[in-house]
Image 1 (cartoon, rainbow, N blue to C red):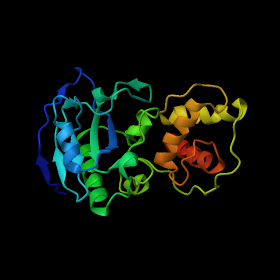
Image 2: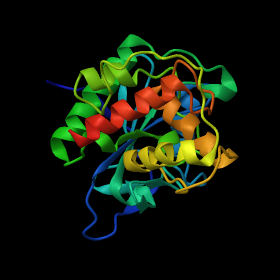
Image 3: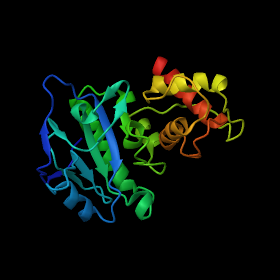
Image 4: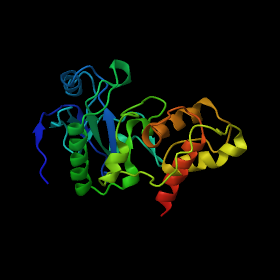
Length: 243
């Protein structure tokens, strides 16, 4: 499988900490009005941001930072007990204007290129499927990308990431709110990888994490509620992790 990649180096990188494995793959959207604007910013030394790759809407892939180096894409972040995920991750920026500039569906050619790129990265690094995540997963209080329009299910069908299958759609009713009912929800979210408090009612912090989970694994209803459909998808994912 060949993948055409155009080198477009960015100066915005530094060395990874010695001995730190590359075990996480983080997907973003650019959230800017054009691909060129995103590329310009990711290569601007004043901006102090970058990613390893950018995938344009026509499927063209640009390499900005060597995989062995640390790109500056994740910011303040957490996943599965790890913080500062720039140290251990590869970042892919996917061209899309995002929620601020007219969020839209990701074209088929772009999704295919993202999938191919991810497969190449996974062939080079020991990244477990559960560590293929969204920017919104690792920074739910700050980020929404790549968002609910991104085809995580299709990506998983092709060997990139995880998706719980055979989970019935139970809708958005029967939402739980009190602390006792939410305790297993909090445990399940923590088991997936999110940072959540161990106990408490449905507070703004938990609602934010639930929205992040929904953007990735329950895009039909990004409500921040622990409803029946969300809980079914969450428990399905936990069963997949435990299998």
